[in-house]
Image: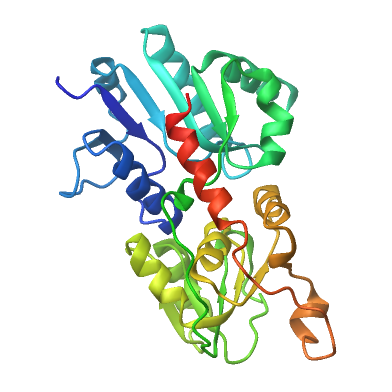
Length: 303
């Protein structure tokens, strides 16, 4: 087999963040083979769970995301740990690029995580918080950034009046509060189906199946975005949305908000319901965009 590089992640499920990570990774490795749930003609693919095919590859790259965590699925954590260790046993090189780490619960699981971090050949961390916490466990680690930041330029705010909210429906119930006159934006098919069933009175928009540039153009129409998913926050930041409110349901969202410094609001009920009462709202100026883009790029080339 001529091509010896495989890209692996949560690909082929139409989750916008993961698909944009793959799009950016293929800019760097256009000849790589992608292990994905859904076959696409745009690039070379193999079925995601056909792990025996990995014996033909010398390098296994996880190009971004947050695969080493137990919050969404402990079975997924075990799957990735076993997959990586088996690939190393057969003599392959493993690179974890622009990765978030954790949360990982349990003494045994954290022990497995430490073993894995010492085993991989290279890792770049998505945020400084993760870098400070875990880099000492690694033999070859640098500070990266989210892969979606690769090769991006600042988008100027377009002075649009639309407001939107991007829920992560796995973590909300049917009584989740949505402000009046807000578009409800679904970042995955799973979210869209839930929202259509439970919030049919709202204007629900699909925000998946898009290229990176299409997703940025979509968000340019908004002056305000409230987002639970991390990539809803990141893409809003890149698109130059003026007012961004992050619902911190997970530490990975908080870690990015900290790095964006004074440009992203952490949502609380007071800000959501009393925005007009002289509350100091942080405005997005994309001042750290160049730094994020450089760090994301370094994750692939300074190894």
